Image 1 (spheres, one colour):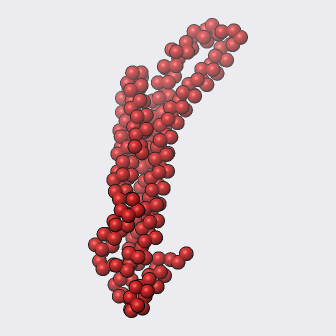
Image 2: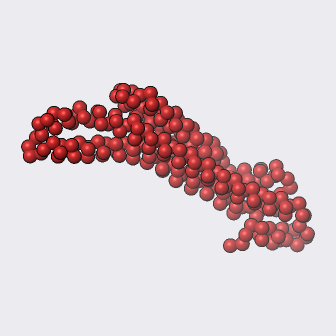
Image 3: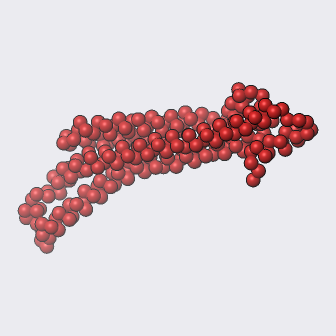
Length: 218
């Protein structure tokens, strides 16, 4: 595959009948190519950081708030103290504890999975959309170069390329939505410190966090 810069002289020659290519057009084209690559990397890195933060916030919430809530809640439902004192045959106290640990582990990891699954799906969707957008721009860059006259013209041409590819408003649809969800999850997990030991409040916060995670991608 030809590189972008190697394609520019051939395309310009074809369009202008091999007339000399203005120096400023080539320089601007090279600058745009380098800037686009840098913006591409920056967008991808930014998206990954937001999703990493969301996953870290979720894991911290599950481990520090939902885990003790699950233990306390399930102890009552399971009647742990009663069963340890009087194990149902043929179980002994150790068997009862093992069974209880299995129950709360499944509950905790099931809840963790419910929170992380939509976040990870949205991560894949955002990154795939970013790659598609920049690939579309790069594929059309050689054509756009023939019409370069100024930085404004470059920006207009790139906006048109995004619109034709059905990717207009990509930042608003994906990046802004991701940032909003990331901030909401971060806010909810920060509130966890104030609800520890309060079963009702912990349950409400856990449900709110699940709802926010599921809203990703909608």
